[in-house]
Length: 132
Ligand SMILES: *[C@@H]1O[C@H](CO)[C@@H](O)[C@H](O)[C@H]1NC(C)=O
Image (cartoon, rainbow, N blue to C red; front, side, top):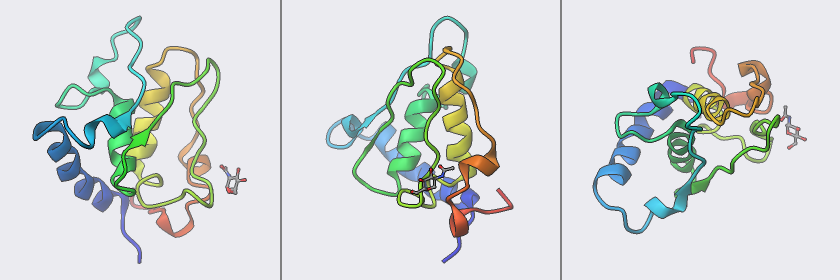
C-alpha cells in the first residue's frame, strides 16, 4: 500500500507530541541521538519542543517500529547509511526523515557529507514518493 511521506509526517507528529509532552517514563529513554555542536548556532534546526534534529529524526523513525530508536554520533567525515533493502520503510524513506538526517549530520560540525535524495532513497522502491 502506497502512502506519501507527507502522510507519514502527519501521522508521526501526534506520536512525537505524545512522547514529548505527556510523560518521560517508558518510551522517552528509548530514543537517543546526538546533540548539535555548540560551536555554531544550530538552534534554528530544533523543533518547537526545542529538540535537536537528530532526536526528532529518531522519533520519526521510531514511529514505524514502536520500540524507540537510537541514532549514533557520526565519526568526522562519515555519513549515515541510507535505508537498505532490509530497513527501508515509510518512515526512513520519508522526505522529513531524509532532511532531518541531513540536518543531524550538518549540526555535528564535523564536515560530515550530505547525500542526495536520490541516493538516500535508492532502496526505497515503493516507499518513495515523487511528491515528497
Ligand atoms: C541497498 O541495500 C543493499 C542491501 O541491503 C545494500 O547493500 C546497499 O548498500 C543499499 N544501497 C544504498 C545506496 O544504501
